Length: 189
View 1 (cartoon, rainbow, N blue to C red):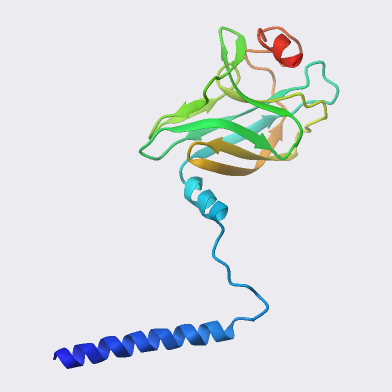
View 2 (view 1 turned 60 degrees about the vertical axis):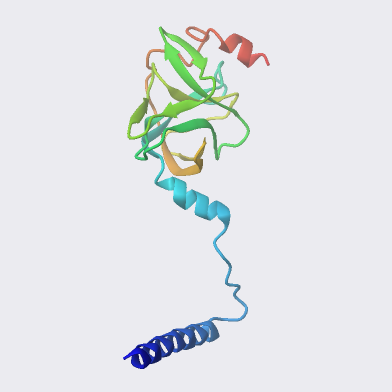
């Protein structure tokens, strides 16, 4: 019985090796077979770590006095560990990107990042936490999409195709300095 089991194991290993050789021989020699990049593995691993549901960019016209707008939605952390959103970038290119909060009508940057507790969600909404796009004078037209990359302590998370929509202001104004205590200093730096 021992000899029979050993013969089966050897036969199975040989069959697997032969199948692997056969498959390798069928692949075109001009196409490299590479391991997935570590960034692709990181994106795949972190994609499940944090989701950004109902994400939307507030549309803005070109040439506004305060060249800024915001991104809203719900960040959900289904993991067993807190995740900190340290920053973000967009496909819009040159702009200043900050995480903000509004308290008592006063908007200010969030120092140290935004923590999304384990198993919980954080809503990004007018009058509360939100992602700010600053120093961007060009139009961001309703109907367009913007790609977003979230910089978290769990790695970068790509959020493609965030819709741009016309939205009325919330509890803060984006068209003038009212309610922007820190922005007079931020905009001059």
